[in-house]
Structure formats: C-alpha cells, structure tokens
Length: 335
Ligand SMILES: NC(=O)c1ccc[n+]([C@@H]2O[C@H](COP(=O)([O-])OP(=O)(O)OC[C@H]3O[C@@H](n4cnc5c(N)ncnc54)[C@H](OP(=O)(O)O)[C@@H]3O)[C@@H](O)[C@H]2O)c1
Image 1 (cartoon, rainbow, N blue to C red):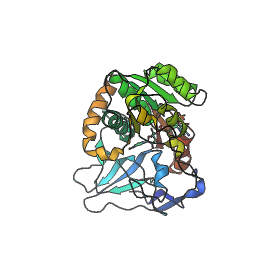
Image 2 (image 1 turned 90 degrees about the vertical axis):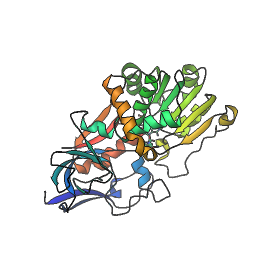
Image 3 (image 1 turned 135 degrees about the vertical axis):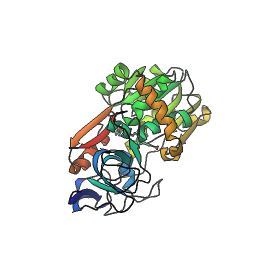
Image 4 (image 1 turned 135 degrees about the horizontal axis):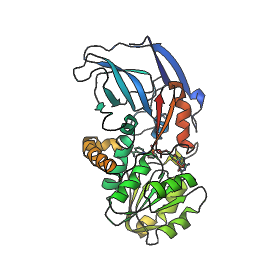
C-alpha cells in the first residue's frame, strides 16, 4: 500500500466552462482496506460530458458532487491488496471510484473485467457506459427498425460512434454529424456511415435534406442546441428523437436553448424522449454480450482516445470534450 493518495476534489461550483481554480489537488494518507474490502491503484479514468452537470447544484438524476468531495468518475483499477473473497491482487475492476490514485472498496456496484477479452479502456467505452448508452438509447428508446434512416450527432464521440455502428449493424442508413473533415472522414471511410455532415463547415439543415431526402426516422441527439433544431425540420412520419445529451448546452451561463422547431413533432406525429442509461443497469449484460459479438466480428470498430499522464492532468483532459479534441472514448491513462 502506498503512503499517500493523490485526489482531485471540487473546490467550488463552476460558472460556465470549468476553470483550473474550480479544482483542488490534494495529497492525503492512503487508507488501508478494512475487513471484507480491497484496495487498488487507478489505471484508467473515464472522461464524460455528464461530469459538467454533476458539478452544478440543481436537481438531476444524481446528487451533485459536493464541494470538497473527490470528483466522481468511472475508472478501471488494479487490485493491489484484498481482504475480499471475490477479489485478488492483479484483478482489474471497473467502478465509480472517483478521480484519485488509490481506491478502497467493498466491491458494491463494481465489475471485475478481463483484459484478455478486451483492452481495459474498452470497458470504459464501447463495452462500458457509453456503449450501453448507445445500445439502449437507439434500440429501446429509439425503437430502431431495419431499413430506417438514422441521424446521430456527436457521431465521432464515444456514444455516437457506437450508436451509428449499431444502426449499420441493424441494416439502417446512417448519417453522422461531427465537427471537422477528419472526424467526417473517419465516419464514412472507417466506421461505415453512409454520409457525414461537418457542422462546423456546412449548413446542417441543407445537408440533412440532401442525405435524408425521405426524412429522418430516428435522430439520436448528443449535442442539442442548433443541431437538434435543424434535425427537427427533417423528421419522417412517426420519427423518434432520442435525447441522449446536449453537450452544446452544458457550459451555458444562460438558460438552455430549447428547440424552436418542436412543432414538427406534431406535424410528423413524432415523439421525443430522453433517457438515463443507469435505468438499464439490470440489462447491461445483454447489451455487453451483443456489443462484444459485433466488436468481435468487426461490425463495430472501437475508437478510443487515450491521454497518458498523471492524475493532475484530469482537469485539462476533461476540457478536451468541450473543444471536440477527442475522437472516440476519451480516457486518461495514469502513467
Ligand atoms: N443519457 C445518458 O444516459 C447518457 C450517457 C452517456 C452520455 N450521454 C451524453 O452523450 C453525449 C456524448 O457523450 P460522449 O461521452 O460520447 O462524449 P463524446 O461525444 O466522446 O465527446 C464529446 C464531443 O461532443 C462534441 N461537442 C463538444 N461541444 C460541442 C458543441 N458545442 N456542439 C456540438 N458538438 C459538440 C465534440 O465533438 P465534435 O468535434 O464533433 O464537435 C466532442 O468530441 C453527451 O451529451 C453526454 O452527456 C448521455
């Protein structure tokens, strides 16, 4: 067991984009595992847009991270010491262990993972929470059917890249929206999307008219704002708009921008529905098996963006999500 544990804690509530002063970098004595517990060293930390929402003190699906608390994060740890019958040194475990170098846990809410079956960061990406989000968002909330036209925003990200590829595996026509020519080329040339729209360079509404001339059956929205509004103008009859997230709005200092084109839901007899992936926790095994099958047969290509560094790099790495600097699942690997 190490003598000390480095942690990133929330120093104050951010206003708008998170700045370095919002965090406190702390070194404290490392705790030893008590009876029935294990301890481990953090290897990979997941960076998620939702983290921005967890910093605000307003009603949500989880309580906010408290001032002075270790920042909430999913991670993969390697067990170093154990008094728990289910965990041995050398085991790898996924859990919400927080942004800290050393972890003590009783194992509740954690999952042992096997690096021989998939690289460890994949358990934070395509086989982890983002993969589950893409799977249930598209198939359950979006009620996707073969042959439909699907549009995914944030398409080159962790959730979007998997969502688009699931839709392809289900025999749909898929259009991805992403920022920049490199991400758009990735979507069509590597990930099998039928078309890509660069929202930074193109008029999204016009591009969707070109690529989805008969309308959109399922719009999987990761970004909200103007892109959601543009997609609403192109809905097919009985379309489903899946509200997965709205990253374009998370750093707003003013009210969230609502969709001014929502009456197309009425005209097109469409529905718009949000969801939280945690509600599907009991069915994660089902999704993981099917996703692992698609990864195994090459129908889903896994995209991960690893930043190798120290725990203190967490704040700067988190900001990459809001600048579009990641392609695929963003993970901080502790060197
Ligand atoms: N409902 C749920 O249970 C659930 C679970 C997990 C995630 N989510 C949501 O899913 C979405 C995607 O999460 P992720 O983990 O997969 O992140 P991600 O897509 O891997 O990373 C975020 C991406 O968002 C794009 N982006 C950033 N600012 C933007 C803006 N102003 N306008 C448009 N695009 C912007 C950037 O890509 P570009 O370069 O293309 O702009 C960036 O790379 C988020 O909204 C997240 O909150 C929801």
